[in-house]
Length: 430
Length: 186
Image 1: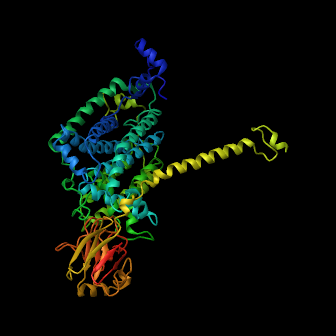
Image 2 (image 1 turned 30 degrees about the vertical axis):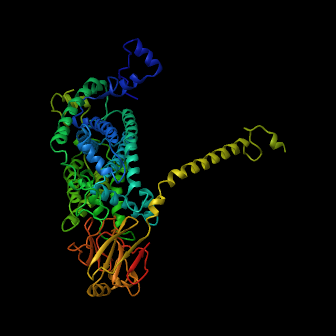
Image 3 (image 1 turned 60 degrees about the vertical axis):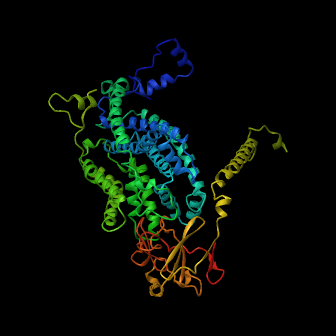
C-alpha cells in the first residue's frame, strides 16, 4: 500500500516497458526507494540509520565473502590463517579490519536506530510488525556476531564460546546434553568452530531476508516521523527520491568518515588484545569480557549472585539476559499511550533521557568490570531499573501522563502556524 | 457395502468423506518422512566418534606434594588434581553442611583412604571458565580452594561452591585408583 498520491512508475523506454510487463522489478524499486514512495517531509537525521544499517550489512557480507576465501575453520590453523590474512594476503589487513570494525559500526547504527524507534514511538500501532521483525533482526545479528568472534580462535574467542554456550547448560535437565549437542563435544573444539563458521556465513543472508520483510511491513503504513502524527495529505510528504536518497547519501558520507577513521587509525580500539593470543583451553584469561555491544546484556547476566525462589542464580542470570531482549517483543502492548513521539510526552521523555539511557550506560560499564566490590550492587540496581522501565514505568506513565498539544499536521509542525512557532523535533528542510 | 461405491468427495452416513482419510494418511506419511529426513541433520551435531574416543585419562599422583595441584585434561576439559594438606582437609571437614549451597562432604568427593587427593574438573559450574588456584601463586578465593575470575565464584578446599553465581560444586569426574598412586579418569 502507499498513499493515493504516490507517483506511478512510468517506463522511460521500450526496453523498460518490455521489462515492466514481464518482471516488474524496476517498478518494485521505484515504489520502495524511488520517487514512488511518499515519505513524511519532516524526517530528521535519526531516520538515516535504517539505511546505514543496511549499508553496514552489505559491508559485512562483501568483506566476509572474501575473508572466507582465505580463512580456514580448523582449530589447528584458524588462528594462523587470520594472521596470514593480516600479513600475507594482499589487502588482507584492510579487509579484516573493515569486517571487524564493520561489526561494531553495524551495532552502533542499529542501536541508534532502535533508540530512535523507542523515542519517537515507531514501535506503536500500526508499525508493531516492523518493530517485531526488527527485534528478530537484532537477535540474528547477536548470534552472527558471536559466532564470528569465535572464528579467529583466540583466547577471547574460545572463552566467549565456552561462556555463551554455557548459558544453555543452565536449563534444567536437558541443559548439559543440549550444550554438548550444540558444541559437538564437551568443550568448544573443531566441531564447534566448523559449525560456527557455517552458520556465520549463513545467518547474514537470513538477516537480509528478514530486512526485506521489515521494509515490506514498514511500507504498508509508511515511515513514522518526529511528530509521530499520521500523514494527512500530500503536502505532508515528499518523494523518497530525490529528497531522502540525497539526505541518506549525506548521512552515509558522515558514517563512512567515522568508520574509516576507526578502520585506518584505531582498528583495534573496540577489540580486546587477549584475542591475539591463541586459544588455550587450560587457561582462562584473568578477565574475560564480551565485545562492547554485548556488555549491557552481560551485566544483566552477572547481576544474579544468589539463588531466589526455586531457581538457582545461574538460571536466573540466563533468564534475565534473554528476557531483557524478549520483553522488547511485548513493548508495543506495554506502552498504552496513543501518542507516539516523545516530543509530546513529557514523562516518557524524562524517563527516556534520565532513566533508560543512563541505566544502559551503567550496565555497559558494569559489564566490562570484574564481578567484585561495588560493581556488583551497581549492576543489580541498573538491571532492576531496566526491567522496571519496560514492565512498570512505561505502562504506568501511559496512564498518568498528560501529553503536550500535538500539531494539527506534519506541515504545520514544519512551517508553523501564523502566530505560534513550530513545536517538536528538528524539522528537515525538505 | 454401498458405502464403498460412493464417489471420493461425498460424505457417507457417518459424515466422513473417503477423501478425508486419503488426506490424513498422505499428510501423516509425509510428516513421518520429514522427521526421518531431519533426524540425521540433527544427529550429526552430537559429539563425533573421535571426540568420544578421548574419554579416559591416566595419571600418576605420586609426585604431587601436599599443597600442590596439577592440571591435566579429560575429554579435552581441564582436570585439577590437588594434594590437600592436613589443614585443608580439616578446614573442609569443619564446615557444617547447612552452610553449603550443594551439601557434600570431602569424603563423598574423594575415594576412601585417598581423602588427600581431590580430583575435580577445572570447569566452573557457572559458565565453564577455568577457575584459578591450581597453580602456584594464583588467587584461591575467600575459602582457600579455587576462584573463578569470570563471574566471581569461590570454591573451598573440597572444591565446593561457597560464594558467587555457580550453582553446584566442581564436578568430580568418574575415576579410580588402579594402584596406590595411579589414577584412571573416565
